[in-house]
Image 1 (cartoon, one colour):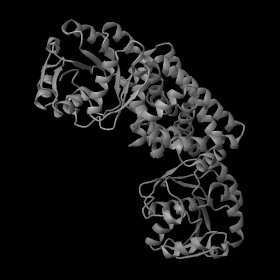
Image 2 (spheres, chains in turn brown, yellow; image 1 turned 60 degrees about the horizontal axis):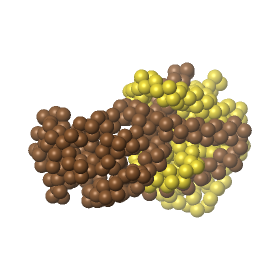
Image 3 (cartoon, one colour; image 1 turned 180 degrees about the horizontal axis):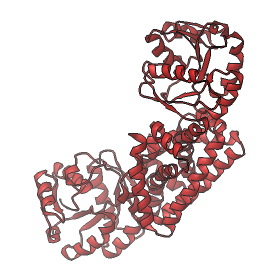
Image 4 (tube, each protein chain N blue to C red; image 1 turned 90 degrees about the vertical axis):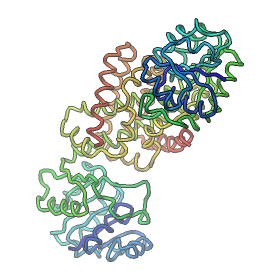
Length: 279
Length: 279
C-alpha cells in the first residue's frame, strides 16, 4: 500500500518511520529540499519531493502540516489524485477542519493522534511515538465508512488506541484536557508576576517548588501552539473557560463564607475523580 | 546542644534524622508510644517520650505538629521550659501562627521549611529531606534577633536555603505558589467532570495525557492539606484567587474578541517568566 505524508516534521516524520518499518511504501512531501533528503536518509519515507504530483499514485494521504495549512494543502493536492484516494489529517482541532475538508474531498476523514515531544522537525522524528497514544477519529453524517475503516487500520497498525467521536465532542474534550489547561496554567504565572507587591513576587520565585512547577508547565510551553488552539478551537475553549470561571466562583465563595464542609467535598471528589483521567 | 522535636511525623522525623546524624542530642515527643519507639530505633531522636516535661533542658524546640495544633502545643510546653529556650515551628502558614505564638513565648521564631514527600508518618522520615530546600524564617518587629540567628543556623546546618520575610509576605507568596495552585488544579477536574455532556467527559477521561496530568496533580492530592491551607491562609488565598480570576477574565476577553496579538504577548511573557520560578 502506497501512503503519502505531507509535512515531514515531528509527527509526519515519526509516522513515516513507523510505516516504512512495517513495510509500507511511503511518499513524503515537504517544502524544504533538505527535509526531503533527511527523511529519505532516515528511512522516514521511501521517496520524497517538493512536488505534490508525486502523490498521484497514493491510496491514503496524511496531511501533517500545521492546522492553518491543512485546508489549503488539500485544495492543492486534489488535482493530482484519483477519486478513491483517502485523505486524513493530524490536526489537534477538528470542527474547523473536518467539514470544509469533506466539502473539498468526499473521502476525507479527520484524525487526531495525541502524541508528541517537546521537540520539532524531522530531526526530532522517532520510532514508536504513537505506541499506546490515543488517536481520535472524527466521522460525521456524510463521512465514508470505508475510509474511516482504512484510516483506523493504519493508526492501529502503528499501535494507537482508536477512539471515535464527532468533531464537536472531540473539540470540547480537547478543550478540557489540553487547551484550557494552557490558559489556566499561563494565567497562574501571569497573575502572580503581576502582584503589585514585588517582594511577594520575588519570594514566590525563590521558593516555588513541584506544585507550582507542574501546575505552570503547559502555560510556559509552546506559544504558537497555545495561540493556534485558541484560534482554531475558540468557541469550545471559551465554553470551557466560562464553565471553569463559574465553578471557581463557587469554590471562592465557599472559602469566603468559610463553608469548609463544601470545600472538603470538592477536594475529596477531585481526588477521587483524577485517576479516571490519568490511569 | 539539646534540641526538642514535638510531632515525629515525616517532617519532625526527617529533621531528627539529620540532626542526630550531625551530633545533636535530640529529644522527641509524640502522642503515640509506638512512634516514640520507632523514632529511637531509627535514630531520628536520642530519646523520646509522651510526656512534654522531657523537653525541660532543651535549648531549641521544633513544633512539628499539624498547623491546627501548634498554638495549643506551645501553651502546653511553656510550663516546662526555661525562659531562654527558643521555640520555632514548621507550619506552612505563618500569620495565623507567628503573632499569637510570640505573645505566648517571646523567644518564638516562625519557620517554614519547604520540603516533603507524598508519604506521612515516622515510617516515611528520611535523611537529607531538607537538602537545598528553601526555608523561610518570618521575623517581625518584636522577634528576638538572637533567636532568629540560632534557628537559621540549625536549618542551615541541615542544608536548607534560608530566606527571610514578614509573615504576610510569606503567606502571600505561598498562596501564589502552593495554595492557589491546589484550588485552580482541583477546579480543572471539578469543572470538567461537571460538563453536562457525558460523552465529552468520557472522551476527556480516555484521552487526557501529560498536560492534564501535570495541571491537575495538586488538585488531586492531599485533601486535609488543601483544606488546612484554605482555613489558615484564607485571606491571602482569597486575595490571589480574586487576582487570578480578574486576570483570567482578561485572557477570556482577548479570546472572545479575537485579540490574538494580546494573547500572544501573554503566552510569550509567561513562557519567558516561568524559568524564574523553577530554575
